[in-house]
Image (cartoon, rainbow, N blue to C red):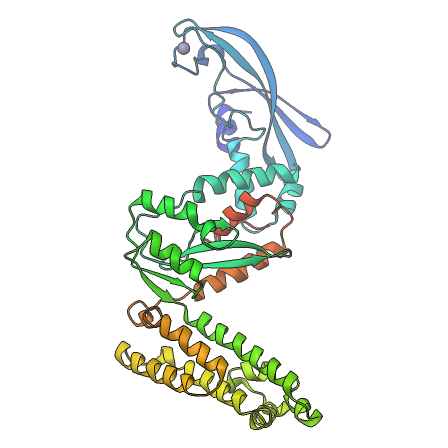
Amino acid sequence: MSTSLLYHAFGIRGYQYVSSRYEFGEVIFRIVKRKQDLICPVCGSHKVLRKGTVERWFHSVPIGSKPVAIVLAVQRVLCLVCDSLRQIQLGFADPRRRYTHQFERYALDLSRCMTIKDVADHLNVSWDVIKDIQKRYLIRRFSRPKLNRLKHIAIDEISIGKGHRYLTIVLNLHTGAVVFVGEGKGADALHPFWRRLRASGAEIDAVAIDMSPAYIKAVRDNVANAAIVFDRFHIIKLFNEKLSDLRRDLYHQLSSEKDKALLKGTRWLLLKNPDNLDPSRSEPQRLEKALEINKPLSAAYYMKEELRQLHAQPNKVKARTFLLDWIYQAGSSGVAMLRKFARTLAIHMEGVLAYYDHRISTGPLEGTNNKIKTMKRQAYGFRDQEFFKLKIMALHRTRYALVG
Ligand SMILES: [Zn+2]
């Protein structure tokens, strides 16, 4: 084989082809470095003495379906200039890896549409080799995202799998990139993020979060100049939780079996967007009957429908009037759950209305969350937490979001 083919087909330059053989279904090329090409890996001097060799094998790109191995007696040299005794630099592979750079690139290309196992099977290497290649690539490209131009971010936690394990995710709302994945939830999970953010010199304009005191404090303490925007979906979600609780409490208070039967199974109807109620299953009628028997429940239900309009106001002034009105109605409804919720919104009013200054939400995180769940379903290698986190940070670049 010519030196040129060695370079163009296998990415190996500065070596000479010696021989090839075919063994156990594998093509094996032996190559050698010419004596006059030996240089000191430390100072680059040609004045070196040969001091023994170590034979090494490298996986290279296959020829068709045939795996290819490159065999080389790696020369150790003693430098007469700087007196160091080292193995020469390979050029075509990283020092401690058993595959060539070309092999690595090929494995990464395949990883864009194949699972780790498929790539490993195709290239006749172990699962760990492909995972190692992916991981090193992900570290290079995604482990230290640039934070200096960050302006609008969303923070939320996601639950992963069983055992109430959580990850806290920070999303760049402009690029959709996950810029941080923290272990656990709450303020502690975010400490490393704030540290990196400070070091980057970024000036955050606004942060979308839910109304949890831990996040509020964390944002206040760490990016005091940023506006807090309480996520509109979380507000409705929180209200729905309270509405469910109310329905359950009322159900248990009812003495008449007939009334209980009417209320039974109405939880989803209460939470559903009214436009989505299915007439063919008489959902609107069932909901109406359930609301008729119970005044507090119907009050809460209609207040929820009102609340959903809060983020559809034409401007901040109108929205403020709308919210104050909602708070007044809820506060004077005589329903404890509504009074309590009115208080929550009154306390958080500025953050709720800040949506009209910065139209951001944690909504995009929801999409990321779904992708993570899909990823987890196909994944067996995610016992390696760091690998899993890196994959999350690569998600927005679908071209690079390597498959399981
Ligand atoms: Zn030297």
